Length: 227
Image (cartoon, rainbow, N blue to C red):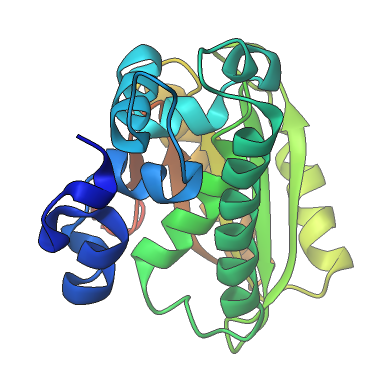
């Protein structure tokens, strides 16, 4: 049965407008951006197939262009729509962070960093420089490593913070192939960087880890040295 023949409360667009986006599944959200399916699949069926094929919506959004376009039913137009929707979300969060509006909500900060790092297939380390009012001064990936580790120079992080006149920092890195559980090395780096920041009167606000399918905030989880 075509989506247009479904009950109104079951159609993704109508369901979103009536009940809100939170009531839609990942497949229903994706189907809205796909707009159409194939001759044998509705847009929702195509969306479910893509999510099942990649393992999750996050994995689909982070997959290389060539891999996604190789999927049946995914042409350049559909892929461009997905990329545009992802970029729209990134820019929305970026605009909030630049005016300090989102930094009181840890979930919004995690969402922003996730969109920045989720597509990285190697481990990277990034820094958000903030002023006293929690306005975003700069976001930059400072170090790039391999698939499971990344060397970080604390002195370079501090020089970067001072060059942007940052009074507060959020650091972040990714675990491209595992979950966001911090390692012993992650904990040691966080402790050492916090100690170094304190010496320069810079506040380390949080350390966020973006895993394969999850995101962790040290501050939100009350992990040392924030707990």
